[in-house]
Amino acid sequence: MSKAKADPENADATVAPTWSFEQALKRLEELVRRLEQGNVPLEQSLTEYAEAVELLRVCQGKLDAAQSRIEVLSGFDANGEPLVRPLGGDADMSLEEKRDARSSRRSADATGGAGRGSRKLSDVDETGQLF
Image 1 (cartoon, rainbow, N blue to C red):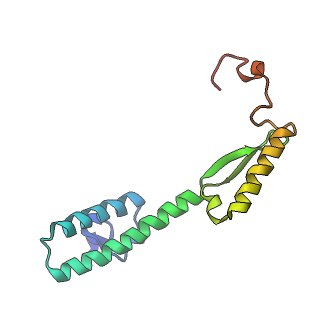
Image 2: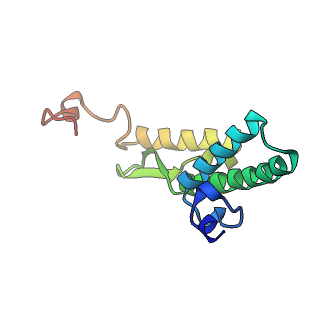
Image 3: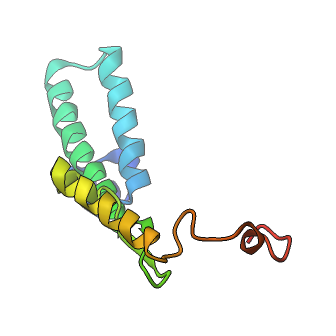
């Protein structure tokens, strides 16, 4: 049974947190297929279902961790510096806070920032290159 510690094909729910996202997802997909077929005895189905729930939790945790590391460009400040925020950072904001954030970005753009409308057409593509 020591092989189960390193091999998602022979899963052991206690090692699932050490697997990569891809390993956990592969094992989860395998379990779902087996459970959907309905050819597994009840006790084994319950055990595999519990393992699938744990793998789902592990996968979701890894996705949440990855998402928290991704930043989204949300505009530019008055000096033309990029403003970034965590991806999904708006989820905790109220509608009023979101409105205020948009308003402050627009105000910065209107007061000489490098936002939309502040460039002349000749500034857009001086070199003829995309970037």
